[in-house]
Image (cartoon, rainbow, N blue to C red; front, side, top):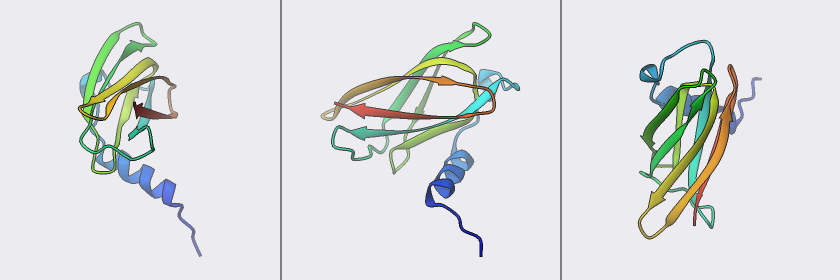
Length: 115
C-alpha cells in the first residue's frame, strides 16, 4: 500500500497551480517557492497580494507580484536563486514581511504573518 502525505499532496497541487515565472528568466539556477499568508492568530488569508523583491545570484534586481489562493497559499515553480523579501498588506488585518533565500533545485518555504 502506498502512503501519500497530505503535505506532499498540497505542495504538489500548489506547484501545479502556481504561475510560471518565464518572465523572470527561467534557467537552471532556479528553485521553487511555496508560501502562505496568515493572520497573527494563524488564520490563512485568501486573496492577499504578495510582493517579492530582491536580487538574483546573477546580480539582477527583480520584483514580482502574485495573489494567495482560497487557502492563503502562493508559489512559483521556477524562481531565480537569490535573496528576497516577501511582503503583504491587507486592510483591517495588518501587514507583514519576511526574508528568504532561493537555492537552485531546492524548495523554499515562506510564511508571511500579518500583524
